Image (tube, rainbow, N blue to C red; front, side, top):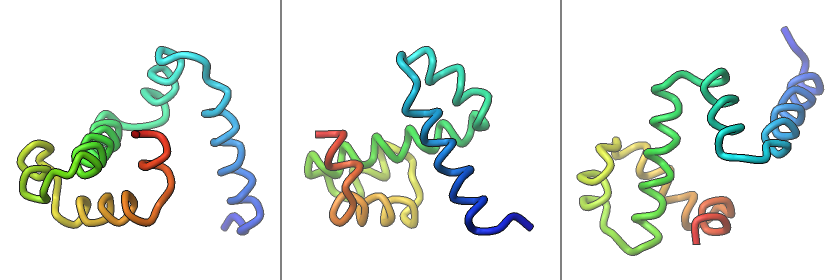
Length: 91
């Protein structure tokens, strides 16, 4: 079992690697190795849902446009209200 300090170091290394990427193609190459196609699709789905929520769309409109589960939409919604990522980088 990896200890918490080692976990934090690995996570920091992941974010360092991601932040070093320069182009969309760099991101695509890394994420295709790092994630499954389904995981990439789910991340893209969450970003689309967040954009729609920030535009004022209703839950029903978002679920129809994104084919997203209500549980995932609820989490995305919380993040658009109380988080910093979506509101900082999608507006």
